[in-house]
Length: 250
Length: 250
DNA sequence: AGAAAAATGTGATAATTATCACAAAAAGCG
DNA sequence: CGCTTTTTGTGATAATTATCACATTTTTCT
Image (cartoon, rainbow over all chains, first blue to last red; front, side, top):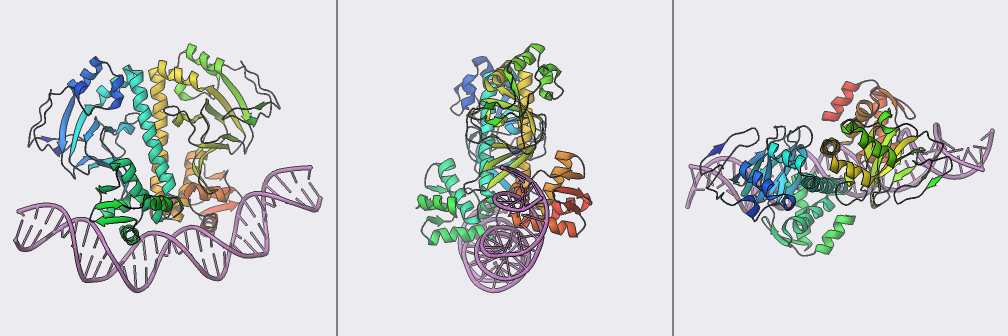
């Protein structure tokens, strides 16, 4: 059992950040209110093997959690907070792939294959994470077929969703793409029509592959047309029907 | 053991095409010269379960093999020929995801999850296929962890490749995208600088999300600059270095 | 609180690519 | 082998989006 306290620093190939405050780690994984639904198929013995081999950490907004290209030594489970998954492009730009919501694993794509992280992850809000040694995780997969199928199904679904978002995007003009981002945050991430978007205009542009200025102009246009209200990063969607129409035809 | 002869028609949710000639199906899977490398980890008993539950078919160029949205009842193994994987877009267009080369499975993405085909497949050349019942295939995965890992690794690699091609594409202008297509066919599909491209200009445009006319114009430009030679669909790459430079910076 | 840095909004202009129109060439078919 | 259908090439024009420049606002940090 590992106790991590304020002002500790953790160094590792893909683990480097300050832990900000003492974390209660007495809770067994089996009793964790944030446990992943895939763990439902694990025996209490297996749950215990995770408990004995994980460590918990809290991470502040803005922290880089994983850098692409680094070897994968841990599977990271997101207990709370929001994370952006992205790839670095040759020239300073980045491409944001998705926003990851609580109760998801980061870096599962690299567990089969070359054990290298192919994406980078950065905290959009303060986070609570669990690090599980990749060897422990792989052992679980090999010993429990049901767990393996759960994990693979979730990898498959995630891949499919991302891929489809990308394909759709590539056939849309910029208005449709920005409409999609708004719909994505409203319907997938926050599940409400009023939310604080955790990205800058630059990052929103990077989600859909257009320029910062274009993204901003489209936001303004949507506002003057009464489709959304904007106060800084606080956004209210007033006319979802219209947004969906723009997503389809615009 | 199922014998399929000339002029038979096979009807099924995702299996509908004419079998063009009698197929020799005496060869055991274990002796098949085209078997997939993942089968190396299967026991002879397991290989035999495939042999008893597969059927072979030959398919002519242009045949639709699978339509997206249909339920997956078979995993299809491509013994020889080339297949295009694509999705249909709302308005008559399609988006080509990849060209599939021999010794690959089609439709693996749908084996975990909803058992629905998410992509469509069409024969670019005459094909030799093996249909393996999805229940037989799933049973193998559940009973042989090593096989499951082999298959998942190959799914993971394929996903990663496709996804990266897409991400890269979305940050390139049309010249770079067409350069990428030429490099893809030369280095991934045919492994030579002189090949017959199995796609129309329209389809090439659909691979990279630009218009047919633009694609054609770029081909002409590359020819007048001496980078490639074109006679109909026969293409010779004369200056790979220059193509790679265009792919990176153009 | 106050200075420095980062993010944003907007106009003017340039670059890129799509669309339309139509002629020419190639491929498929009875 | 002709006829039909599909594919291709190319010019002219329109639409879309990026880029540059700079003023303003917001956030961050001490």
